[in-house]
Amino acid sequence: MVFLLLLLRVAVVAAIAWAAWRILSPRWAFQIVVDESGVRSHRGITTGQQQRLLDLLQRTRFPEGRVKICGRCDEHGRLILQFYGAVSDETRQQIRNYIASEL
Image (cartoon, rainbow, N blue to C red; front, side, top):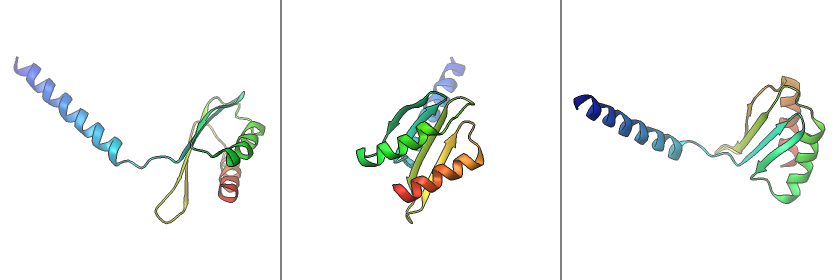
């Protein structure tokens, strides 16, 4: 019985910590998922910007599987990009330059 109460307390503390982390962590302004076949999903990009960026990503090949690109601007207006998956440094820089100049 004592073990179950301890386990319940740990679960409640973990749930509160997770909720606080989700609330306080910065949100991505846009997110794009690309794989070897092309763009799989995207959100947070306006229609005018969307087609140009998606065209670039469609031409860029990601042979190593799925890649997720998330981006936002910090409080000083600087672009912050996070890449998940296998992306070469050259491709990262190309995408970063394109997004900085176009969006």
